[in-house]
Image 1: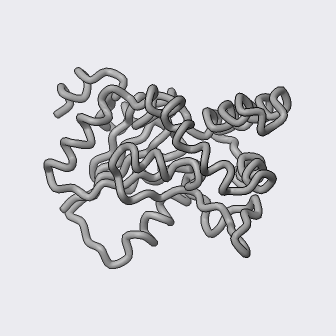
Image 2 (image 1 turned 90 degrees about the vertical axis):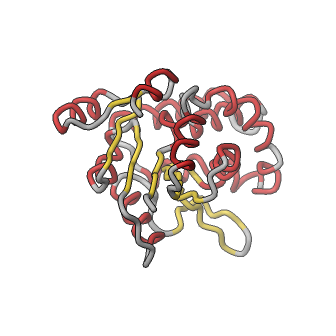
Image 3 (image 1 turned 30 degrees about the vertical axis):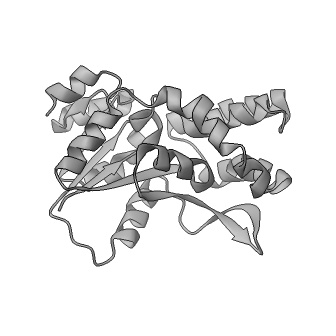
Length: 224
């Protein structure tokens, strides 16, 4: 059995779930619209640039849960997924996932985005194993800090190895759009750049890695 590992934002999704969650909270009036939107945009650009301070971002993104409580925001997640996530599932995602299922592979999503946001998205995509950045919870309350290793950059590989434990796979395919995932991609025997950013595209071309677009179903079919 092979392991098929998928990044989420800008890979399986044609957008960023963390960024859209921030927009959604602004629309619901749960955060200060102008200030939150400005900070949300700043952190998003830092992620794209490869300069994101993941601990600082976690404190920012988890602040609404700390303030309003997990139960209140969890009740909004079905609406968030329906309004913001379902429309941005990349056209080729279902085909790619089904191909790996048909091959008998173990499917896994790995994302830097909080588990609080991504759990219902993984369920939408029909993937049971989710590695995400875990918020710290003490006495049933979110603290605004990260529990364990942030699932970001090298942390994705650390957390994947911890999850894998004694499980043995014949190989690993990794799909990602971002240069932030190079440590994970380099660990795969089949790395695939998906709608890659400029830095990842250049790296993939230099290493002769496959480059596909899940935003174009034809690209996925031709890549088989």
